[in-house]
Amino acid sequence: MSDLVTRLRRHNWRITPQRRVIAETLEGSHVHFTAEEILERACERMPELSRATVYNTLNEMVALGEILELTLEGRSKRYDPNADHEHHHLICEGCGLMKDVHTVADPADWLPGDERHGFTVTRSSVTYRGLCPDCQGA
Image (spheres, rainbow, N blue to C red):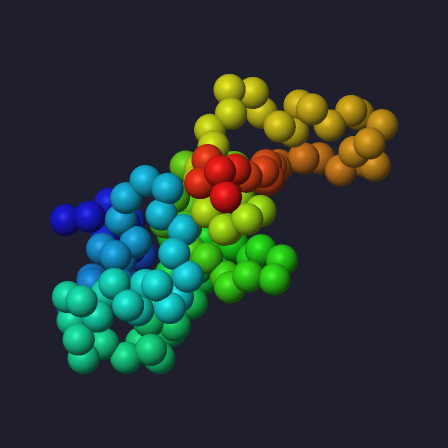
């Protein structure tokens, strides 16, 4: 059973065959598919899967906090199944490739006290941008 399916079961979320295929499509490291990519990959295993089912299922998994919905300027939303692991992202400005980044320090520590404006920082998100090896060579 996949890690994501196991996490979803903890919410007593009914795992239908369609939901299972969608969740299993999201398995793996550095997975940041768009809804359309998820639909395409899931349909390879279950051709009768509908677009509406994929979008509804993704919305429900986001609402449960088990996947992250990532919005990049000018690009389709992407879905990250690693919601249970604190991490950041490295994004290629050429092709949109996205990789998870695990920093050794807490980025909240980088924020000087006078820049916190009285906030108690509970979490932070860092996005690194650049060009992947393929786009550097293009």
